[in-house]
Length: 107
Image (spheres, rainbow, N blue to C red):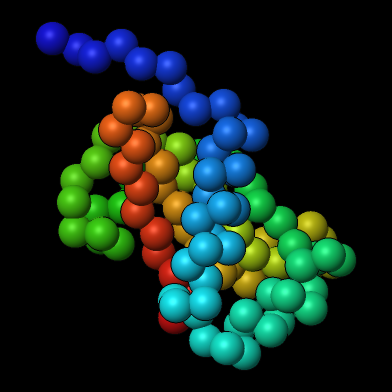
C-alpha cells in the first residue's frame, strides 16, 4: 500500500530548512563560517530548493527515495549567481505528520 501525501511546496521547504539552519548553525558550523554567513548573507546569501540528489546514502548512511524528500541548500553565491559556498544541505521529508530531516553541514 502506498501512502498518499502532498509534496512540500518549495517555499515551505525553504522556510523549514532556514528555520532549522538558524536554530542549529551555532552548534554545527565554525565561528568563522557563522561570521562570514552573517556578514555576507544580505548581499550574497541564498536558500535554494534543488533537485533531490540520489547520493544521500553516502552522506547519511541510509538509502532514501528521492521522491519522498525535498532538498534545500543554504549558502553564498558568487558573481555568476552560482552557490559556491554551501553551509548546509537539507533533506526534508514530504510527510507532514512525520517530518523527518537530515542535514549535512559544511566541514
